[in-house]
Image (cartoon, rainbow, N blue to C red; front, top):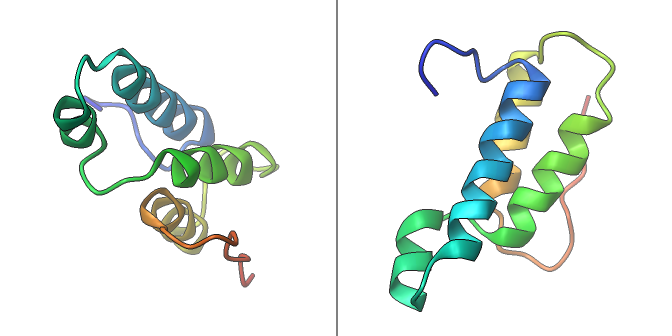
Length: 83
């Protein structure tokens, strides 16, 4: 992500959206899995939704960890953020 800070919500969302775009453009399932690198499409959407609802200029450490955790989550129900 170069010099951009990932704890800024807009930067985090941009990073997630770029990953989703690369995964969608993948020509094979193996290439798609390589792009996602243990992340899940549903988890990325959950993380984007969570971060987009934050009303801060910079995410706290707990918010950032939760957003990152969402990108890797494989369950059927989105985990709640414990503030």
